[in-house]
Length: 74
Image (tube, rainbow, N blue to C red; front, top):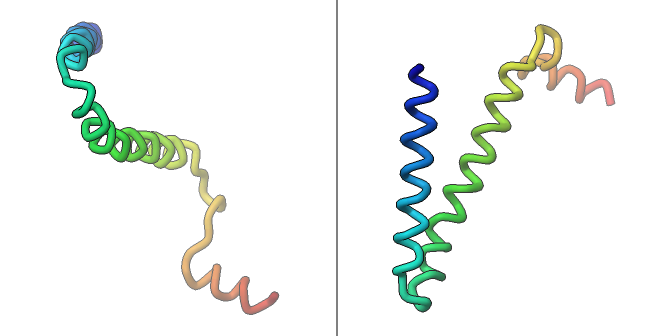
C-alpha cells in the first residue's frame, strides 16, 4: 500500500511540475535545464550502480591487490 501511495504522490508532483514549467518564461528554461540535466544523469548513474550491486556475484570483481597482480602478468 505504501508503494501505491508513493506512486500517487509522485504522479501528483509530476502533474504539478508540468504546470509550473508551463509558467516559466522561455528565457529561464535554459537555466532550469542546466540545473536538471546533471540531476537526471546522477539518477541514471545511481540506478546503474544499484543494478550492478544487485547483480554482482562473488568472483565477479577483483580486489585491488588481485587487479594489480593481474596487471603485472600482462
